Length: 320
Image (cartoon, rainbow, N blue to C red; front, side, top):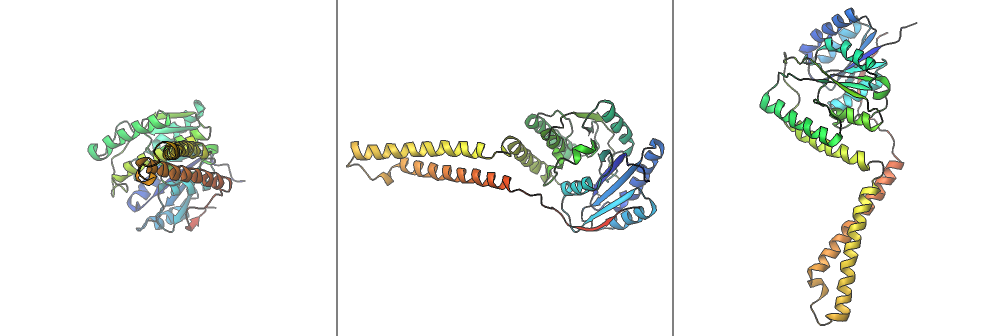
């Protein structure tokens, strides 16, 4: 009977052919000392180089290695989602494949997770080897905003090195660009025992970063989306209905005022359609009606919501 897997490593990647073999050897060396059972799940997010060939070769030689290959590039969130679905370990660890995350931190993260009875623990790259202008400063601003909006005090939301209990990653749904906010998604589901630990950050040895400067802009938009969904996602009518009601009442008030004024006080005055109050009333009533419709549609969608697959897998290897 096969022993239960204790730790699952989920590693999303895109065009990292030069890093895969040294990364795999690094992981193997760590677990040779740690002695806990493990599996490594490489998720090839539509690479155009030889990354998948290397993953296949590693899976042939090492029964701990598994791989998922996407038909095309879907993004890091979808890659993590696929890896989470396959993971069987009691604890799941994520790290990047570019050798900037150190596998040597994994045993310590798991031990802290167990000792402090945490749901998840996030790495903190306190000392970074990235560009100060293009990565460090924007990252600090982004993390500051994320802390303020989410209420979760982490120094480094973007750190790819994180460890979770299995029940956490099997509960949350990582999609879109929400991989940055997995701690927030977990907290929204009730897994609010979140810790942080300083980890080593390595300078990139091969290739170049796959994320441009626009990732911070997208990150802020995702943060606003997450805040809105957290506040009103389960009951959208509470937001749209409130503002729709306010607009309709104000618009209706202007309409009544215009009607009474025209009928009883200014019969010979200019046409109602020539007065600015008419257009204010019309605009507010139209917007109010649209907000109400949006709220109703949101409620209907939530009640008929079904989980949809967000990616197509070309190949999947399962070591025996």
